[in-house]
Length: 348
Image (tube, rainbow, N blue to C red):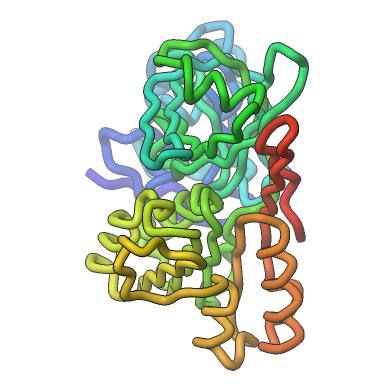
Protein backbone atom coordinates (compact mmCIF):
# COMPACT_ATOMS: atom_id res chain seq x y z
CA UNK A 1 0.00 0.00 0.00
CA UNK A 2 1.28 3.45 -0.93
CA UNK A 3 0.27 6.53 1.05
CA UNK A 4 0.73 10.22 0.35
CA UNK A 5 2.56 12.60 2.63
CA UNK A 6 2.43 16.39 2.33
CA UNK A 7 5.05 18.60 3.98
CA UNK A 8 3.99 21.98 5.32
CA UNK A 9 4.70 24.82 4.92
CA UNK A 10 6.36 23.97 1.58
CA UNK A 11 3.42 21.97 0.22
CA UNK A 12 5.75 19.31 -1.23
CA UNK A 13 4.08 15.89 -1.57
CA UNK A 14 5.63 12.44 -1.86
CA UNK A 15 4.65 8.78 -1.77
CA UNK A 16 5.49 6.46 1.12
CA UNK A 17 5.37 2.68 0.96
CA UNK A 18 3.97 0.70 3.88
CA UNK A 19 7.41 -0.55 4.95
CA UNK A 20 9.10 2.87 4.80
CA UNK A 21 9.61 5.50 7.45
CA UNK A 22 8.63 9.06 6.64
CA UNK A 23 12.33 10.00 6.45
CA UNK A 24 13.20 7.15 4.10
CA UNK A 25 10.37 8.04 1.75
CA UNK A 26 11.24 11.75 1.82
CA UNK A 27 14.88 11.04 0.98
CA UNK A 28 13.85 8.71 -1.85
CA UNK A 29 11.81 11.60 -3.24
CA UNK A 30 14.84 13.92 -2.88
CA UNK A 31 13.14 15.95 -0.15
CA UNK A 32 15.54 16.41 2.74
CA UNK A 33 14.28 16.95 6.26
CA UNK A 34 16.54 17.20 9.32
CA UNK A 35 17.87 13.96 10.80
CA UNK A 36 20.75 12.74 12.90
CA UNK A 37 20.88 9.19 14.21
CA UNK A 38 18.09 7.62 12.10
CA UNK A 39 17.17 5.33 15.01
CA UNK A 40 14.94 7.45 17.26
CA UNK A 41 17.62 8.49 19.72
CA UNK A 42 18.64 12.08 18.96
CA UNK A 43 15.36 13.88 18.21
CA UNK A 44 16.73 15.92 15.28
CA UNK A 45 13.96 14.71 12.96
CA UNK A 46 11.11 15.59 15.33
CA UNK A 47 8.13 17.26 13.63
CA UNK A 48 4.39 17.70 13.93
CA UNK A 49 1.60 15.59 12.46
CA UNK A 50 -1.11 17.96 11.27
CA UNK A 51 -3.38 15.27 9.85
CA UNK A 52 -3.30 11.46 9.82
CA UNK A 53 -1.95 8.64 11.99
CA UNK A 54 1.43 6.96 12.32
CA UNK A 55 3.06 3.95 13.88
CA UNK A 56 5.67 5.73 16.02
CA UNK A 57 8.14 2.87 15.68
CA UNK A 58 10.95 1.96 18.08
CA UNK A 59 12.51 5.00 19.76
CA UNK A 60 13.84 6.19 23.10
CA UNK A 61 10.99 7.24 25.38
CA UNK A 62 12.95 10.25 26.58
CA UNK A 63 13.39 11.49 23.00
CA UNK A 64 9.66 11.37 22.22
CA UNK A 65 7.46 11.40 25.33
CA UNK A 66 3.80 10.38 25.56
CA UNK A 67 2.90 14.01 26.16
CA UNK A 68 4.65 15.03 22.93
CA UNK A 69 2.74 12.32 21.05
CA UNK A 70 -0.52 13.71 22.40
CA UNK A 71 0.57 17.11 21.11
CA UNK A 72 1.02 15.66 17.64
CA UNK A 73 4.78 15.23 17.53
CA UNK A 74 6.62 12.29 15.96
CA UNK A 75 10.16 11.21 15.07
CA UNK A 76 10.12 10.93 11.31
CA UNK A 77 13.21 8.70 11.17
CA UNK A 78 11.23 5.85 12.73
CA UNK A 79 7.55 6.78 12.25
CA UNK A 80 5.65 4.88 9.54
CA UNK A 81 2.36 6.27 8.19
CA UNK A 82 -0.86 4.34 8.80
CA UNK A 83 -2.88 6.82 6.70
CA UNK A 84 -2.16 9.68 4.34
CA UNK A 85 -0.31 12.37 6.29
CA UNK A 86 0.14 16.10 6.46
CA UNK A 87 3.25 16.92 8.48
CA UNK A 88 4.95 20.13 9.58
CA UNK A 89 8.73 20.12 9.41
CA UNK A 90 11.34 22.38 7.88
CA UNK A 91 13.16 21.20 4.78
CA UNK A 92 16.90 21.24 4.23
CA UNK A 93 17.87 23.00 1.02
CA UNK A 94 20.90 25.06 2.03
CA UNK A 95 24.08 24.30 3.91
CA UNK A 96 23.00 26.62 6.72
CA UNK A 97 19.94 24.46 7.37
CA UNK A 98 22.07 21.55 8.62
CA UNK A 99 23.40 21.09 12.13
CA UNK A 100 27.21 21.03 12.37
CA UNK A 101 28.41 18.22 14.64
CA UNK A 102 31.60 16.99 16.26
CA UNK A 103 31.74 13.22 16.04
CA UNK A 104 34.18 10.35 16.52
CA UNK A 105 34.81 7.95 13.66
CA UNK A 106 36.89 4.87 12.89
CA UNK A 107 39.07 4.36 9.84
CA UNK A 108 37.36 1.42 8.15
CA UNK A 109 39.64 1.07 5.12
CA UNK A 110 42.50 2.76 3.26
CA UNK A 111 42.85 2.04 -0.46
CA UNK A 112 45.94 3.37 -2.27
CA UNK A 113 44.40 4.10 -5.68
CA UNK A 114 47.44 6.03 -6.95
CA UNK A 115 51.00 6.43 -5.64
CA UNK A 116 50.00 9.62 -3.84
CA UNK A 117 46.21 9.25 -3.44
CA UNK A 118 44.31 7.18 -0.88
CA UNK A 119 40.58 6.59 -0.60
CA UNK A 120 39.80 6.54 3.13
CA UNK A 121 36.44 5.30 4.42
CA UNK A 122 35.26 6.33 7.87
CA UNK A 123 32.63 4.59 10.00
CA UNK A 124 30.54 6.51 12.53
CA UNK A 125 29.24 5.08 15.82
CA UNK A 126 26.10 2.97 15.42
CA UNK A 127 23.95 5.65 17.05
CA UNK A 128 25.12 8.46 14.74
CA UNK A 129 24.63 9.49 11.12
CA UNK A 130 25.81 12.67 9.44
CA UNK A 131 23.33 14.72 7.47
CA UNK A 132 24.99 16.72 4.71
CA UNK A 133 24.56 17.97 1.18
CA UNK A 134 26.52 16.33 -1.63
CA UNK A 135 29.66 18.43 -2.17
CA UNK A 136 30.26 19.51 1.44
CA UNK A 137 33.37 18.70 3.45
CA UNK A 138 34.46 17.82 6.99
CA UNK A 139 37.37 18.97 9.16
CA UNK A 140 39.43 16.23 10.78
CA UNK A 141 40.42 17.42 14.27
CA UNK A 142 44.01 16.38 14.91
CA UNK A 143 45.81 15.90 18.18
CA UNK A 144 48.05 18.93 17.59
CA UNK A 145 44.96 21.14 17.58
CA UNK A 146 45.07 21.69 13.84
CA UNK A 147 42.39 20.83 11.29
CA UNK A 148 42.64 19.10 7.95
CA UNK A 149 39.72 19.62 5.56
CA UNK A 150 38.57 16.92 3.16
CA UNK A 151 35.54 16.74 0.90
CA UNK A 152 32.99 13.98 1.28
CA UNK A 153 33.07 11.83 -1.85
CA UNK A 154 29.95 9.85 -0.94
CA UNK A 155 26.44 11.17 -1.66
CA UNK A 156 23.97 11.44 1.24
CA UNK A 157 21.94 8.39 0.14
CA UNK A 158 25.05 6.18 0.56
CA UNK A 159 26.33 7.46 3.90
CA UNK A 160 26.99 4.16 5.69
CA UNK A 161 30.71 4.93 5.27
CA UNK A 162 32.07 8.43 4.67
CA UNK A 163 34.61 8.43 1.85
CA UNK A 164 37.51 10.88 1.57
CA UNK A 165 40.04 11.19 -1.29
CA UNK A 166 43.34 12.24 0.27
CA UNK A 167 46.54 13.25 -1.51
CA UNK A 168 49.86 12.60 0.23
CA UNK A 169 51.93 15.66 1.05
CA UNK A 170 55.47 14.50 1.98
CA UNK A 171 56.21 15.64 5.52
CA UNK A 172 52.56 16.30 6.25
CA UNK A 173 51.55 15.93 9.89
CA UNK A 174 48.46 13.92 8.94
CA UNK A 175 49.10 12.44 5.49
CA UNK A 176 52.56 11.05 6.32
CA UNK A 177 51.18 8.73 9.05
CA UNK A 178 48.11 7.99 6.92
CA UNK A 179 50.25 6.71 4.04
CA UNK A 180 53.06 5.16 6.07
CA UNK A 181 51.69 3.74 9.33
CA UNK A 182 47.87 3.69 9.32
CA UNK A 183 46.44 0.22 8.86
CA UNK A 184 42.77 0.88 9.65
CA UNK A 185 40.80 0.89 12.93
CA UNK A 186 42.35 4.22 13.99
CA UNK A 187 39.95 6.51 15.87
CA UNK A 188 39.60 10.10 14.63
CA UNK A 189 37.32 13.03 15.35
CA UNK A 190 35.82 15.44 12.88
CA UNK A 191 33.54 18.45 12.60
CA UNK A 192 31.02 18.92 9.84
CA UNK A 193 29.41 19.18 7.47
CA UNK A 194 30.95 22.43 6.27
CA UNK A 195 30.98 24.49 3.10
CA UNK A 196 28.59 25.87 0.50
CA UNK A 197 29.71 23.77 -2.47
CA UNK A 198 26.58 21.83 -3.37
CA UNK A 199 24.12 21.54 -6.25
CA UNK A 200 21.62 24.37 -6.64
CA UNK A 201 18.56 22.27 -7.30
CA UNK A 202 16.25 25.20 -7.97
CA UNK A 203 17.83 25.47 -11.44
CA UNK A 204 17.24 23.32 -14.50
CA UNK A 205 20.32 24.60 -16.36
CA UNK A 206 22.82 22.09 -17.77
CA UNK A 207 25.85 21.63 -15.53
CA UNK A 208 29.56 21.62 -16.32
CA UNK A 209 31.81 20.14 -13.62
CA UNK A 210 35.54 20.96 -13.65
CA UNK A 211 37.70 18.83 -11.34
CA UNK A 212 41.43 19.04 -10.76
CA UNK A 213 43.08 16.01 -9.14
CA UNK A 214 41.36 15.04 -5.89
CA UNK A 215 38.91 17.89 -6.55
CA UNK A 216 37.01 15.02 -8.14
CA UNK A 217 35.84 13.94 -4.65
CA UNK A 218 32.99 16.40 -3.97
CA UNK A 219 32.05 16.43 -7.65
CA UNK A 220 31.72 12.64 -7.51
CA UNK A 221 29.27 13.02 -4.63
CA UNK A 222 27.19 15.62 -6.47
CA UNK A 223 27.05 13.60 -9.71
CA UNK A 224 26.11 10.40 -7.89
CA UNK A 225 23.37 12.34 -6.11
CA UNK A 226 22.06 13.63 -9.45
CA UNK A 227 22.14 10.23 -11.12
CA UNK A 228 20.56 8.47 -8.14
CA UNK A 229 17.64 10.91 -8.12
CA UNK A 230 17.39 10.92 -11.92
CA UNK A 231 17.80 14.68 -12.16
CA UNK A 232 17.44 15.13 -15.93
CA UNK A 233 19.88 18.03 -16.40
CA UNK A 234 22.69 17.65 -18.93
CA UNK A 235 25.97 16.90 -17.12
CA UNK A 236 29.48 17.31 -18.53
CA UNK A 237 32.49 16.39 -16.37
CA UNK A 238 35.99 17.61 -17.20
CA UNK A 239 38.57 15.94 -14.96
CA UNK A 240 42.09 17.29 -15.22
CA UNK A 241 45.21 15.57 -13.95
CA UNK A 242 48.91 15.52 -14.73
CA UNK A 243 49.30 11.93 -15.99
CA UNK A 244 47.02 8.97 -16.59
CA UNK A 245 47.76 7.43 -13.21
CA UNK A 246 46.39 10.56 -11.52
CA UNK A 247 42.91 9.84 -12.91
CA UNK A 248 42.62 7.41 -10.06
CA UNK A 249 38.95 6.44 -10.61
CA UNK A 250 38.61 7.02 -14.34
CA UNK A 251 36.56 3.84 -14.82
CA UNK A 252 33.78 5.26 -12.63
CA UNK A 253 32.81 8.30 -14.76
CA UNK A 254 33.33 6.07 -17.78
CA UNK A 255 30.64 3.78 -16.34
CA UNK A 256 28.36 6.76 -15.66
CA UNK A 257 28.71 7.79 -19.30
CA UNK A 258 27.81 4.33 -20.56
CA UNK A 259 24.72 4.12 -18.37
CA UNK A 260 23.39 7.70 -18.56
CA UNK A 261 22.71 9.46 -21.88
CA UNK A 262 22.69 12.88 -20.18
CA UNK A 263 26.26 12.45 -18.85
CA UNK A 264 29.53 13.12 -20.73
CA UNK A 265 33.05 12.53 -19.37
CA UNK A 266 36.10 14.34 -20.78
CA UNK A 267 39.44 13.54 -19.08
CA UNK A 268 42.29 16.01 -19.69
CA UNK A 269 45.99 15.42 -18.98
CA UNK A 270 48.41 18.33 -18.63
CA UNK A 271 51.64 16.27 -18.78
CA UNK A 272 50.98 12.65 -19.84
CA UNK A 273 53.83 10.21 -19.28
CA UNK A 274 55.45 8.70 -22.38
CA UNK A 275 54.15 5.23 -21.50
CA UNK A 276 50.58 6.57 -21.05
CA UNK A 277 50.11 6.43 -24.84
CA UNK A 278 47.38 8.99 -24.16
CA UNK A 279 44.91 9.39 -27.05
CA UNK A 280 42.73 11.99 -25.32
CA UNK A 281 42.73 15.70 -24.57
CA UNK A 282 45.81 17.45 -23.21
CA UNK A 283 46.55 20.86 -21.72
CA UNK A 284 44.78 22.86 -19.01
CA UNK A 285 41.43 21.46 -17.97
CA UNK A 286 39.63 24.81 -17.94
CA UNK A 287 40.97 25.53 -21.45
CA UNK A 288 39.33 22.31 -22.66
CA UNK A 289 35.99 23.75 -21.53
CA UNK A 290 36.80 26.99 -23.38
CA UNK A 291 37.61 25.03 -26.54
CA UNK A 292 34.30 23.16 -26.41
CA UNK A 293 31.92 25.98 -25.42
CA UNK A 294 31.74 29.39 -27.04
CA UNK A 295 28.82 30.52 -24.88
CA UNK A 296 28.23 29.48 -21.25
CA UNK A 297 25.44 31.96 -20.59
CA UNK A 298 22.89 29.15 -20.17
CA UNK A 299 25.01 26.93 -17.90
CA UNK A 300 26.02 26.43 -14.29
CA UNK A 301 29.66 25.58 -13.57
CA UNK A 302 30.93 23.76 -10.47
CA UNK A 303 34.73 23.70 -10.15
CA UNK A 304 36.95 22.08 -7.53
CA UNK A 305 40.73 21.97 -7.43
CA UNK A 306 43.80 24.11 -6.89
CA UNK A 307 43.40 27.92 -6.68
CA UNK A 308 45.15 28.70 -10.01
CA UNK A 309 42.67 26.47 -11.84
CA UNK A 310 39.69 27.95 -9.98
CA UNK A 311 40.86 31.52 -10.57
CA UNK A 312 41.54 30.96 -14.28
CA UNK A 313 38.19 29.23 -14.79
CA UNK A 314 36.25 31.95 -12.99
CA UNK A 315 38.03 34.72 -14.90
CA UNK A 316 37.86 33.20 -18.38
CA UNK A 317 34.40 31.65 -18.20
CA UNK A 318 32.81 34.90 -17.08
CA UNK A 319 34.86 37.33 -19.19
CA UNK A 320 35.26 35.30 -22.38
CA UNK A 321 32.37 32.82 -22.39
CA UNK A 322 29.49 34.88 -20.93
CA UNK A 323 28.98 32.72 -17.84
CA UNK A 324 26.92 34.71 -15.31
CA UNK A 325 29.20 35.20 -12.26
CA UNK A 326 26.44 33.98 -9.93
CA UNK A 327 26.36 30.65 -11.80
CA UNK A 328 29.99 29.80 -10.97
CA UNK A 329 30.41 27.72 -7.80
CA UNK A 330 33.82 26.69 -6.53
CA UNK A 331 35.68 24.82 -3.81
CA UNK A 332 39.36 25.77 -3.80
CA UNK A 333 42.12 23.45 -2.49
CA UNK A 334 45.39 24.93 -1.30
CA UNK A 335 48.53 22.96 -0.58
CA UNK A 336 50.91 24.08 2.15
CA UNK A 337 54.17 22.25 1.51
CA UNK A 338 55.57 22.90 4.94
CA UNK A 339 52.66 21.34 6.77
CA UNK A 340 49.82 19.64 4.96
CA UNK A 341 47.29 19.62 2.17
CA UNK A 342 44.73 22.17 3.33
CA UNK A 343 41.41 23.21 1.85
CA UNK A 344 40.05 26.71 2.07
CA UNK A 345 36.36 27.37 2.35
CA UNK A 346 34.33 27.25 -0.85
CA UNK A 347 34.14 30.30 -2.99
CA UNK A 348 30.90 31.98 -4.02
